[in-house]
Image 1 (tube, rainbow, N blue to C red):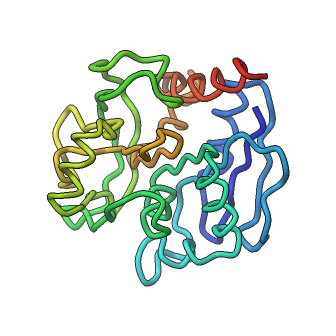
Image 2: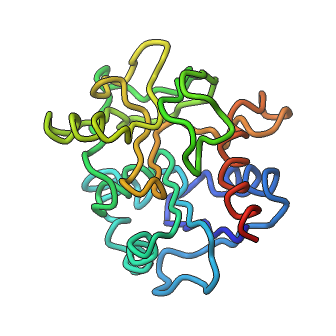
Image 3: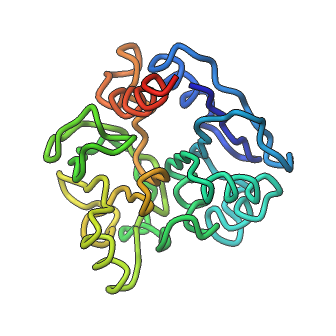
Length: 225
């Protein structure tokens, strides 16, 4: 699996993401600077990792969504490419219009850094095939703006089209609408989520609960490669 991880000023989870991808696929992902205009040829997956791109000025992810490389990421997604955005990456995907809704400040107005439990709402996708719907897993969360918001029509569409990937299963600490922790694009190839499964992909880092997500996406390309 050939993966590229986009690095913005303020990104801080790119190495964690690289570790998880390497453990799942055996391949070293490539770091991509946000100021580049083009993606490398032959990528299977583009990842927007967590952090505080551009210091979270203006709105979380708003400045990063205007970076030169995001035009190529959008083109890649529109051609059916796989794109994963975690935490700040989810915020960037929403700001870039690749996923609906927005991430607002946490209901508590506090930064939340703790483990949470997620429930898998849909199996059989490129990111969840190693789980069954209804399974739960533990993963860290670390964000100040993780309160997922969308209007009722959008939320109803996400529910009706079964595009909610994950929900918080142990209490909705950030106030996200309908306990939503992650959503998928209609073609199931773009996933945005707030918690950090890459930080539970190695037993030395506290567990491997998040590793099945990276194994799932690796399976996609192992099957076609």
